[in-house]
Length: 299
Image (tube, rainbow, N blue to C red):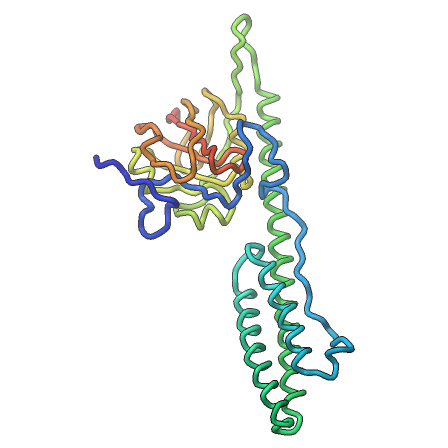
């Protein structure tokens, strides 16, 4: 079997076959299981607002349609840049970008009309006012899109916290210590849901773990599940060797071991082949601490 060439991400330029996944979008330099996220992981959504375009022209711009349009354009440009990565889809940002481009062209047109003494009567004032209004509406739509993103982040955070609490409760209720051995056994399997087969885009959607079928095929497993730490991966920090994991649609598994400290972009050959399944997350959100759980089927 040829050795796989390392790549940066599983979906870029067709080199997806054997690269470990989960990019540095949530990278936080935190080592070890159960380490604090120091507030940098995406689990805790940060309040986010975009600056609104001015509703009323200032005294300095009220009589200058070009200046008023430029002021509104700058506010819209700031809102557009600030919303990057904080929307569920790019439609509102793309629409505002088109509005900004139209406003920039309009500002030049108004400037030329003003230089010609007004050209067509009322064209400079009316045209610029319409563009300012259009920019304001675009920023309002973008504000709504950001608010929807914030609500989704809050929902995901609550869901992840509930999953972690459920796991902690299961471990607390089912833990038994064998007398004289110090061995701890957790009773009651952890349930992991693989919501789809796909690539980095599906992982970034933060809807659950994603099966990378190409890596699974290379390693000989039924699945290779990957998930961001903040989207549910943190729940795996308490699953040590011997822990039971149920994965609907795939079966029941037991943790046979784990491989940690892998850097983002590591070759898949760094992971032992031949296990029935695999689960990967970036511990603490760190791109330099990718950890893979090795799973064997028990049911």
